[in-house]
Image 1 (tube, rainbow, N blue to C red):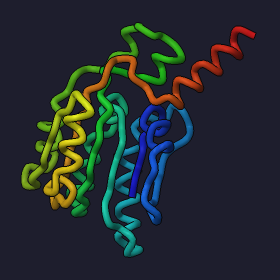
Image 2: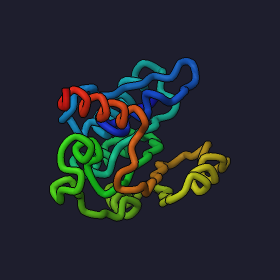
Image 3: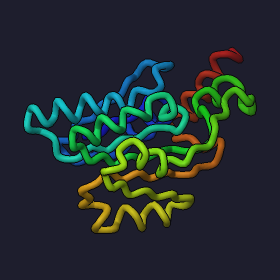
Image 4: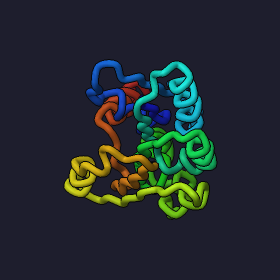
Length: 181
């Protein structure tokens, strides 16, 4: 089961090759940021009821996560073991690309995500990682303990402020052409 946040996470995840039988959810409407964690709650509970739950992978940006992070405690309460990948580039990337490249209103505060998730369910062991390079991420993803985790895994992926999937850049370039035509 894969849930991707609207915006940057969604554009990147939709281009990801997934195994056959993978369930994929996203909210395609721009402006509905904060969807991923709550969406993961619903998808995981429904998947368990239907006997289809195996693993929950969530992709979200740090700005979206800051709106609904408390829903992680609901996942923990229901025994869901999420793999949470946070695209952390200090702001709202979609808005940077479409309006306000360097505007301070597109910045978000820095949080300690590992500490945050441990505080939601102190009785649940949560593994947290902060990565800054592809090599660091590859090391975590290839780790057998990570792959077979029985507790929540939180990967804070620190990205460049203007990093974005190629699909988002293409959408932005198309928008620029429309506006200049």
